Length: 121
Image (cartoon, rainbow, N blue to C red):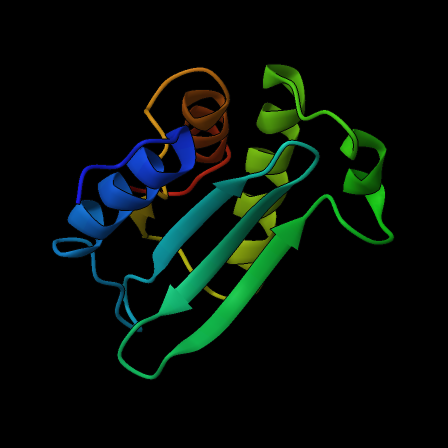
């Protein structure tokens, strides 16, 4: 069945990407998701199905100021916060899962900020 909406295209890209991208305990998968109002980053060990660390603009905390509209600058801040959360959880190296989103704009800004903060992709 041919996808008709942008969300269906993104979902198809994500399924295609997930065939190759698998996280382990030593190198977890860094999942990125952007909605219209929020951004989420999770570090997932696919072997056990556990989330090792997570950062989001939802709820309380310093990233809550970016809720409502996540810009490129906000994505940079989220990337830095994600790298700090990973470091706190003992994660140094990850596999990047862009979630079916194209690598550019907010996704690229988040990834580059996480790399600058010390995460290895």
